[in-house]
Image (cartoon, rainbow, N blue to C red; front, side, top):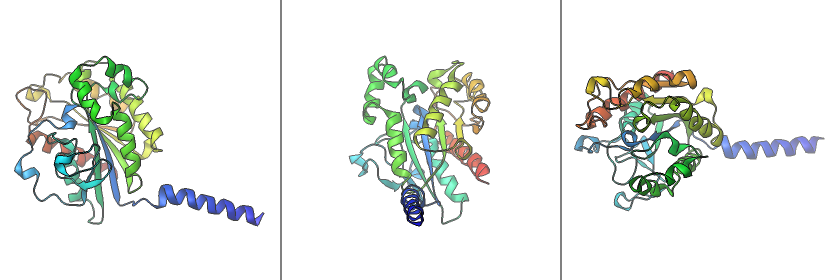
Length: 277
């Protein structure tokens, strides 16, 4: 009997030691997904590339020879944070604002997998192949960077990240391509629930932060979608809507300017810091 207990204890120690104890609880990781505004549309400016604290890290999701980065490795989060030639994103100033307001022994890491122009259906792991098959060539070209499976790449990178730290939340900026889709909140829940299941996360400890698209006060072409985004907490209780009101946008009224991304990113961080407290 004593031998059985000892063997059981040894097994539990091995199992939990590999899956929990090896993690650094002071390395907070956030998954970032969506379409072009999470991918990064605005040109990166000089102020965005200097003095980036190495407490803020990005796990590269694709190989980027031009940046000397390899998929699945951590780097100081100097933009671009999505792919090799993308622009500034909300995740940039989310991370900077987080480390500025967290204890100095806490690090923040982000994983950004986003595809411009995509519907939320692209991240539905059961139906994404049909969606891609019916998509235009320009979207297929972007999806190819993720081996035709952005959701799968996000999960793959998240599992690597979990060996180093703890996933604290999910940042979503998507909706323009689903404007006026009354089923959007349910579709987002499918993606959210799949991430929880595939990464062994709990809803109670994994908030979802969803940003509004370009606001009506900036003439946003898809601003009507914000009414649907506002209803997300009714479907996902541990979700929060990040206002885009007052965030400057580009001439196309679809994307934010660099300053708009900085503002939006800081708002994501402000809400996450509130949740952590």
